[in-house]
Image 1 (cartoon, rainbow, N blue to C red):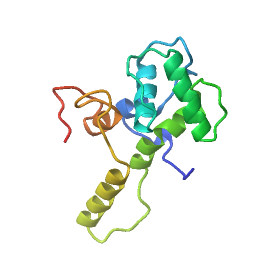
Image 2: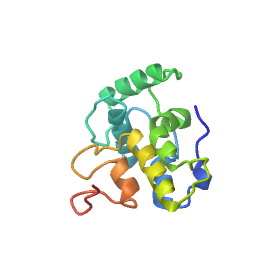
Image 3: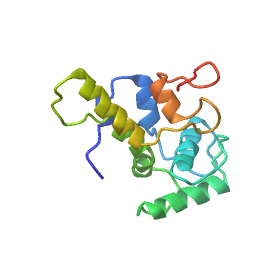
Image 4: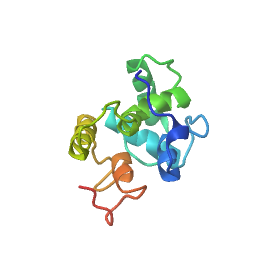
Length: 146
């Protein structure tokens, strides 16, 4: 995995919540962290409902994701699995190592970087981690992002 920005380098608390895992999440868990996990599973092509309930279907997809990512297949989401899930967002936040000739070049480089990561809505219109990234932690009908 490329060197990514560390969570401690992320200045905004709302953004730290997107990429920080406070504890191992496993089957039976029901809270917002499960929603994040389900969203990222969907982003990576492991489609599941986003209901904040870590049931057998979510566990099965976590195992498939872990296997595809060559991680230990446990069905639990630990810090390592969560970092692999959120790597696209971490990549989008990692500074580009380049000296730009102009502000315009910098804007273009970052725009291309983000587009290459395919930011999408997940879980409904104006919903998901990419929406929250661009809307400073908010999502939903009152926060059109594109």
